[in-house]
Length: 306
Image 1 (cartoon, rainbow, N blue to C red):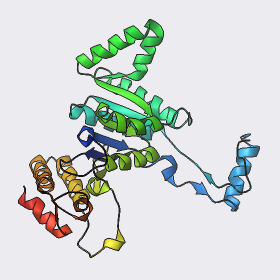
Image 2 (cartoon, rainbow, N blue to C red):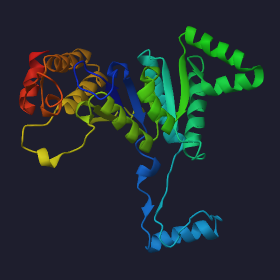
Image 3 (tube, rainbow, N blue to C red):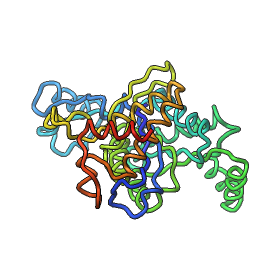
Image 4 (cartoon, rainbow, N blue to C red):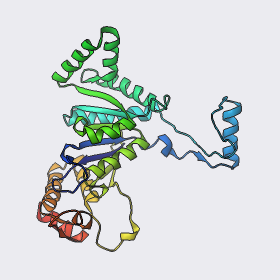
């Protein structure tokens, strides 16, 4: 899973009124979906072969311009879905968080994203039955006994401290993280959705310059921790950019290794530097009365605030 925690550090300039309400961890599946890279360029023999197969063998009639269309394939597996949702639920339970939200576009892509939702719910009920209450359970109770009974069952589950596993259509979710961000804590979603969501959420708390990330296989324990923003060659050697994304990715690594004291010191240092308004150019230009620091100077400022 690609794991991206998103939270606001007090003092960071943001475009929203209540960035303090944003506190989520995104679990993004990162081996499947259209990111698998199975694509065929229009006009190539491979693309023509795929289109011909779809039309002649599968009876597909919805490729409007077959002679000029490129084709991409979107694999979504039970195994990939279950591994991701299992990791998200375990994380939520270990950290005493109230909910896991499956974000999907299953109303349109029924056999890929729709099945992601169904397989996710099935996994939650099968492996975590006594610890969770799912909206799939809610729907079954509502169908058999009415909404009042379903509401009562969910309220009892919440009172008992059970984890609520719910789902939201992706486009609606992008609205709700602006309107009601406090209602969400752990997000489990597919590859493309996760890319959009994590960057959109990062913008609400100050941008990808302060957004850490990790790629973790919770089955094998292997993990890589890296900045979410990728490389920026035009800034190489300028001692200018905000190093927070890399530094906070290191904080994630320490916490993953169980070195919580070291992780806490990093968070304390970043919080102190920002609170003192001693920041790099990306924050400086938006913060009144701030002191502009180089990348290396900001690192020193973090150390001074530990």
